[in-house]
Image (spheres, rainbow, N blue to C red):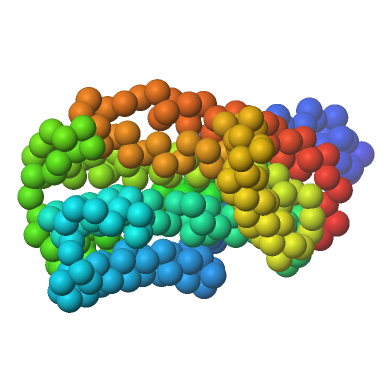
Length: 302
C-alpha cells in the first residue's frame, strides 16, 4: 500500500472532530455586528436625528411663547404635552415633556421601522441566508437581532432625553425640581429621576419591538414589514381611544406608556409602572416566541 493510500484509509477511519459551539464572546460579537449594521443605515441615523430635533422645537416654541408674554406659569396644561408649563421654571422638565410628546407616536414608530426591517430587510437584500451560514444558528441570530433593536430603543430614548437636557439648560434655568406630589428634590436627584424615566420609556418600547420582529419574520419585504408594524401601532393607538373598547384597553401595549410620570412622585408610585413592565413582558414573551417559531421553521431562499 502506498503512503497516499494509507493516509486516505486513516482519514476515513478517523473519528470526526466534535463540532464547536459558538461561545459567549462569539455571541457578543454577533450582537455587536448586528448593532453596527443597524447604526450604519442612513435611515436609522435620520430617525435619531428627527427624534433629537423634537425637544429643540418644543424648547424654542416654549421660549418664544414665554418671551411674547404667553405665560409660562400656571394653567394651560392642555395646550401641549405634560410638563410643558413647568419648563420655563426648570429646563429639566423639557426632558419629561419631550419624552411625553414623542412616546405616543414618534419613538414607537422609529422602533417599529427598525424592528420591521430586522429580518425582512436582510431577506429582501439577499444577505439573510449568508448570515445563517455562520455557526450562529437561527435562534442565536434572532436573539442578536432583537437585542440590537432593544439597544436602538435605548439609544432613541437617550437621543430625545440628551437633546432635551441640552436645550433646557441652554434656554431655561435649572434648579431644584418640584415633583408631582408637590415636594421638592435637589437637581441631582431630579437628574437621576430623568435617567430613570428614560430607562422606563426604553423598556416600554420592548413590546412593540417584539411585535415588529415577529412581523419581520412573516415577509421577505422590508418595506412591507415596516409599514405593517407602523400600521399596527396606529391601529392599536386608535383602538385605545375608543370608549366602547375600554375593556380591552389595559391589554394594549401602549396603555401604560405614560406611567413613567409616576417616577416623578415622592415617593415613586409603582403600581402603574409594574403593570407596564408586566404588559411589555407579556408581549415580548408572546410575539418573541411567535417570531422564534416562525424564523426557525422558515424556508430561507434569499
